[in-house]
Each structure stands twice: as C-alpha cells, then as structure tokens.
Amino acid sequence: MSVMQEHGGPAATPATRASGHASGETSAALSIRGVEVRYGELLALQKVDLEVRQGEFVCLLGPSGCGKTTLLNVMSGFVRPTTGTAHTHGRAIQEPGPDRGMVFQEYGLFPWLTVKKNIQYGPRLKGMPAEELERIADRYCAMVGLERFRDSYPGQLSGGMRQRAAIARALANQPEILLMDEPFGALDAMTRQVLQEELLRIWEAQRKTLVFVTHSIAEAVFLADRIIVMSAHPGRIEHIVDNDIERPRDRTADAHFEMCRRIELLFQESGRHGG
Amino acid sequence: MPGNQTKNAAPAALFARGGATGRGQTALAFLSVAVVLILWQAASHFGVLNPALVPSPMEVAASAIEAIRDGSLLHNTAVSIGRVLLGFVVALVVAIPVGMLMGMSRLVQGVTEPLIELLRPIPPIALIPLAILWFGIGEASKVAIIAYGAFFPIFVSTLAGFRDVDPVHIRAARTLGATRYELFRDVVLPTAYPQIVTGARLGMSMAFIVLVAAELIASSAGLGYMINYARITFKTDEIFVGICTIGVLGFVLNKGLLELERRIVRWKYL
Image (cartoon, rainbow over all chains, first blue to last red; front, side, top):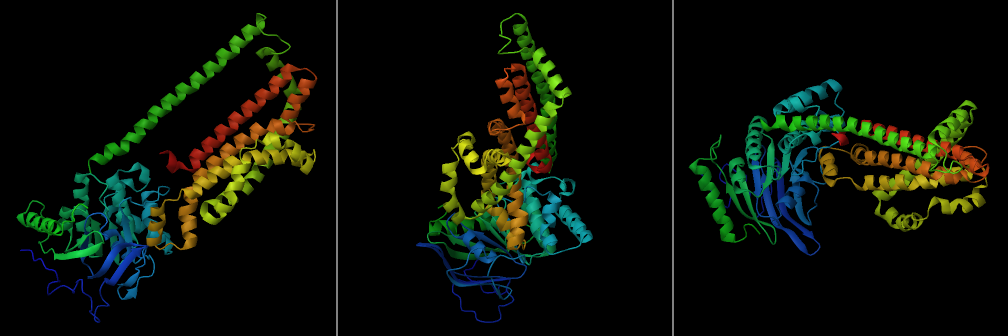
C-alpha cells in the first residue's frame, strides 16, 4: 500500500524541508535549496528545499496563493529566487531554456502558426534541416493524436486539442524536463481525464522528468510519483507524499480513493485548503 | 476524441452560410443603388430637382463619358492617386516606426504620447494654411496634408498591435529557446502585423478623405481641382463626376485592401 512520509523513502533522493545535503546530488534533475521568493513585502514562497529525480513525475499541489506556480517558475527560470539556489542537472538556473520545456494552462500556442509549424518551432530555432523537421512534425502529431489537424490553426481546435498541440510542441523540442502549469485546468472533466491518461502514456514511454502544478487532489494522485503538498500565506511546502500506487492506475480503485482521502486530511489539518 | 469532428466541421458550415449571405448582401446593395438612381432620375425628369444644382444621373453619366473621352478624368484621377500614394507612403514610413517604438517602450510612450494626443484632434484641414506657409503651394503641401491625415489611423493601430503581445507567447517562445531577436521576429511582429495592415487600410481611406481638401490648395490638376474648377464654371454635372469618381475609387481601394488583409492574415479570419 501507499507509503506516506515527510521524508523520502529509501529509494528516494531526500526531499525534505530541511536542506543540508551537500554532495552527490548534482545528478538530480532539479535541485531547489533554501529558495525564498519575495515580491516587495509579500513572501510568495518560504524556504523551499526540494529535489526532483531524473524521470520522476512530481505534482505541486495546493490552493491558490500557495506558491506552486512561483516554485514552478523558479524551476523554469522566469522567477529568480530572492534567496537560495536552483539547479538543474547541476547547472544553476539563470533564465528559461530549451532544456526545460513548459506547458501553460492558456496553451501559449502561436495562433499565426499551424499545429505543425507550432510543433516545429523549437527544433527550427535549433537549425534542424527540413526533412528532420518533417519527421518531428509527423512523430509528435502522431504522439498526441493530431495527425488530421496538423495543418489547422490553433483557433480551429478545441481546448483539449490545443493542449495536445502545446504538449507536442514542448516535447518536440527534446527538453530534459517538462514543466506543466495547471495544463488541464481550463478543460472540461472528461477531456481532462483523457489527457491525463495520454500524458501518463507519453511519460511512461519517454520517462522525462515531469513537474506538474495542479490544485486537484485526484489529478495529483492519479498522475504523480510524489506529491508536494503546499499551503498558502506564506506559500510553503507542508508535506511531501510518496505516491506509490501501482501503475497503470485506476481512478476507481480503493488505493486511489484512500490516497485522495489522506491528502484531503492533510489539507484539513493545516486548515488551508481552498484558500 | 469524437467531439473533434463536429468542432472542426462547424466553422466550415458557418462559412458557407456567410457566403450565401454575402451574395445576398451584394444583390441587395446593387438593388438599393439602382432604386436611388431611378428615383433620382424620376425626380429630375418631373422637375422636382433644380437641374442647375442637381443634374440628373443621365447628365452626370454623359458628362463622365465626355471627361473620359477627352482624357481629363483619367489625368485628374492619376494625379490624385499619385498624391494619395505618396502621402500614404510617407505616413507609413513615419507611423510604423513611431507606433512600434511607443508600443515596445514605456519610456518612448511616456514622452511621445502627450504630444500625439494633442495633435490627434486637429483636423488635417485646419493645417492647410500652415502647410502652405511651410511647404509652399506645390506638391509638398498637398502630400503633407494627406500624410498627416493618414498618419493617425496607421499609428494608432500599429501601437495597439505592438502592445497586444500576449505574455504567454513570449514565455512559450523563451522556453523553446528563442533569443531576443527571435522573440521580436517570431512573436512580436506576427502579433502586430495584422493590426498594422488594418491601420494601413484605414490610413488609405483617410488619405482619400483628406485628398479633396488638400487639392483645394492652388492645384492645376487632380480630382479636388476638377471639382473646385467645376464649381467656378458652374458645371454641377462635373462636380458630380468628380465626387462619384472619388467615391468609387475609395470603395474599390478599401475592398481591395480588405481582401488583401484577409489573405495575408488568414489565421485571424478562420
């Protein structure tokens, strides 16, 4: 059954609120140490320590104002920590880069480019030859099931299809890490479930490191290896939960509900859920 | 996803319906113009209208044929179009960079915006005396007035276009590895481009509106000159020929530019 701990299990790289792991962690996909983010007087993120292993699927879960998006933006390089350090594969994160692909809730597709051109955008910047770009478009359109819509513009697609295209675009650029900021937040419940399943299928095939921001407990429990439970005012990590429910997962399984219940209780304990 | 198919089919159906309405509207437009012309002709025929002030459509048509035959209409039209184009190009060359710099820099915007907002309410016609003093009574003053008139629509649209850039597009491009130059080329410009094209179309319309006023300045050719000269010689039918020519030219140019706009920014009209 699921193990829940404040500290990582034996197989896990320590990921605790207390830092102080000095060496041997340069291989961590993401290493956040003593990071605080302040906007003037506002403490958006309080003293965060977190390590994400290569190939791990991590969910940042919490109510709005808990700093989950801020933490993701520290990882992406859009937000510089006020104090502390952020590294990816041992390199200091200075700014956004193609090694950390990103998927946004608002899709962020370029409306003036077709699905195919959107997907090819990153590789094209890298100077890939035309035949290679064609292969990339074929492969990633197929991966997200958009073969028939490769020449459509984003404005012609439904929300679910847009997010598929956005995921394909991020993956086509071959990032080491995929950062997803409430990617399914704007979708209806049915589409959301389909995309969750597809995301897992893609992740299981590619084994990219994946950091996924959500405020849905069920989504985090269905997707993640590890759930970072955050709370607000100030934004901070409250618990880190190892979610070792066996894959492929079943939303109707007792284990799933049990895990959801436990996390719900964690939020009730801290009295911050829904804040 | 089974829902996709319907989602994709919907715009096509809408488009077909739009096409049908489009044809219906064209027929309706022709009909309304025809009815007005027939009523006008009837009014002239039965002496309701004073022929010295309002010539009949037939007289206007005869006068137009005469003006075409002796080459004066073509010549005056060509001269006017030349002025409009020159003034329009001057406006483009000034308005696009100014709009771009203001749209992209808060500092430039802060410095220039009050000046432009003060200039904007001044109608181009009010500047004619100044234009004569500054540029003389030759081509330069006419082109300057047209350029001034065309400047604002182009400038306002360009500014809006560059301000319109969606932060999420910038963020997406940066995570895909775009440099500052690539952000400008691949995100900022494509965002602003459709609005610049719209501004150019509106600027072209404004250039035509200002044309006649500009040509009131001591000109010896052009549609404005033609209208003004016809007034002096009391040939109302020629005034009507001039007015109708400007109307038709403006209409055709606007339609043409609208079509061009739809073609080059296809993704906006899905």
